[in-house]
Amino acid sequence: MGTRAGAVALAVLGMGTAGYGLRAAGYGSPAVEAQAPFATPSFHHLHLNSVNPDAAIEFYTKAFPSTASTTFGGQPALASPNRVLLLFNKVTAPPATQPQTAFWHFGWHVADVRATLDRYLQQNVPLLPLYTGVGTNTVFVSSDTYPGAGGVLGLTRTQVDEARAKGVKPNRGAGFAYLRGPDDALVEYQGNMPAERFNHVHMYQDQPFCAQLWYQRHLHVSSKPSGRTDANCRVERGPDKTLPALDWDGMYRTPSITTTAFGDVSLFWYMNQTGTPAAPSRGHLMDHIALGVRDLDAWIAKLTREGVTFLSDLSAPAVTGSLRAVMIEGPSREAIELVEVKQP
Image (cartoon, rainbow, N blue to C red):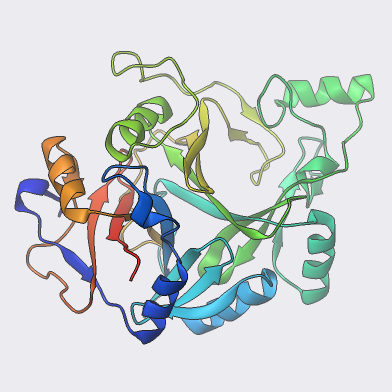
């Protein structure tokens, strides 16, 4: 159960020798000493639940060769070259992926999406097709079908028919694609980018514009102005689904927020795809994201004043290491950990 900040206890994230080495190398804490107390946090890690963390890490190091197996705070981890971690918590049963939480999938930049696709085919990596809106046709890379229009990623079925009638041709260049990772994880890879790295967490928000205001107000993230305020941030979901998409009938892509970033890791938001509010993320495959802050006590005091919901459990606070952390809840019940990260 969530508690308000006035009654919060600090959780402590353990830091063993290997974890300390990562901290000294700057993982999760680029230029953190130079931050003002309330500078925009850095992206520290994505925390996944897994029945076999070692096997999962082995899969990701093969799928994304720039990554490396490591540990952090006594937990198995995957290190991306941009100082971002995937942490794995071992569970005894397959982690839940339903009901849908605010977390949809996570993604990587790759240097060459076509070469990456060819390698995955050779390695028998599970790939997920994208439906194009032309019968049951599918492609593996988004740019192999009709490009979007009007600033929306994808076309409605009517627009697909119009594109076919006009003889529009796919771009066939860089695009986005998906693979199925361990524990039923949905992973996007996108290219062609300057370097391979962990790049984003794609989310569903019950109200994207209201969520944007929440992240700006409480976590000091900068994003493209929407012109929305608390008075008018609640909007209806766009009426039309667009393709390509993982579902044969498409997906809702309006409204969306595309520029919420913590360092070089972005949070992309589409509107909730169903009429059911997002479920809490704790205990699901994508359990929470973690952000690095310099002065945790100052952040706790600030978020207390602002009425943010804390998820830290008073009945069982962890006190087994040197990295302090506290868990808060985002606007669509996503768990967000704030980790106090300082240079040694």
